[in-house]
Length: 96
Image 1 (tube, helix red, strand yellow):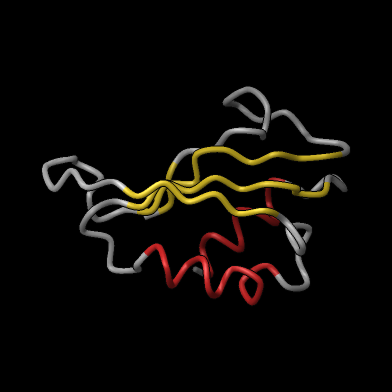
Image 2: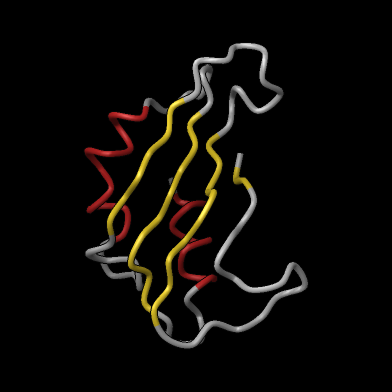
């Protein structure tokens, strides 16, 4: 969860405020979706994502190549967002 926290801070580094975060949780993820939901406010306290809405999608596909991963699918940002080499910082890839 520290990696997720760091990624959210990085996304909002130019003063943007994160309003929503959408995660995809693989079927074999070592962290259960319910644990993520229950600890979300602790994870984002003191970051630009504090007070943000969390949306979690849980996969049941055991054969998905990302079945052991948690993927940060989308981030809704309000305010300035610095472009990255992948376009805008509104959508990010995964963090294992």
